[in-house]
Amino acid sequence: MSGGLQVRVELPQPFGPGAIKLAFVDGRQILIVNVEGTLRAIENSCPHAGASLFGGKLIGGKLRCPSHGLLIDLATGCAGGEGGPQAQVYSIELVEGGVLLTL
Ligand code: FES
Image 1 (spheres, rainbow, N blue to C red):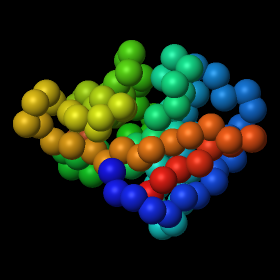
Image 2: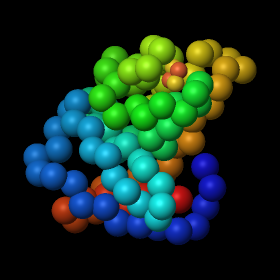
Image 3: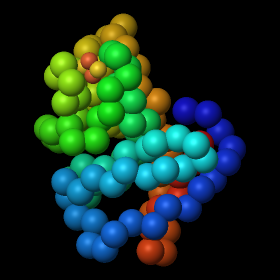
């Protein structure tokens, strides 16, 4: 994670467990995912070959890339186990009517 710019993103309501939103923020595409009540934010780019992760299947705390099936941990961005490729994840916090992403 890098630090600094904080951007507020509105979420559709309700945004319950399993919900996924694709947000366009500061020139990036970021997926916001509700994992069993915990919000996660991850760059919408698979660390394998850059495919969009939107439409991927949520399995526990992981998202399965719709292209070739890489499983990406939404908390850490780790994919394919230790030493595997790494997706960019962002810090996310709940605020009134939406979330605050730290880019
Ligand atoms: S691009 Fe995601 S698994 Fe290949």
